Amino acid sequence: MNDAVFDDLTDVYEAMIDWPKRLAHEEPFYRRLFERLGVGSLVDVACGTVLMVRNLLGRLDASAGILGVDVDPAMIGYASTTVDDARIEWHESDAAHLPVEDADIDRVCCHQGLQF
Image (tube, rainbow, N blue to C red; front, side, top):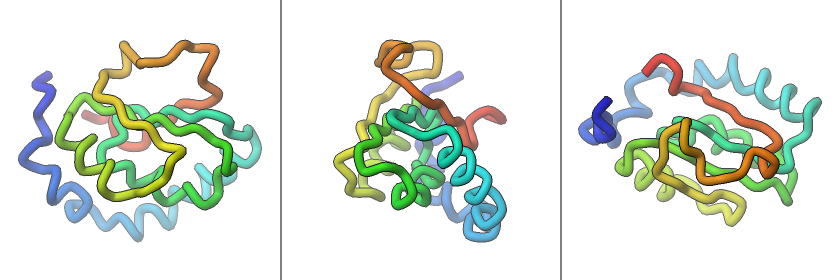
């Protein structure tokens, strides 16, 4: 897969779907899941514009570490401009080569990337 496949879509990605309506259904699931399991560190694989994590930030522990990972540098660049939170680190990487050790991660989520 071409790593820059979404470069032309980065600016319109969030406008392609009715995200407020979709998140109204999905966000409660993720919120309850994270509340039950706890989140000390979270990797958002194929984070894209980091839409889901952006909506959950206020519900995660202040000490939670979040790693946004995407193969597309344009998506990482865009995502990093949409949220200002010291808990988030950004990395250009694919899911098979995460820039962390397994033991350092509590949870992994992949909100939108599996269909691509």
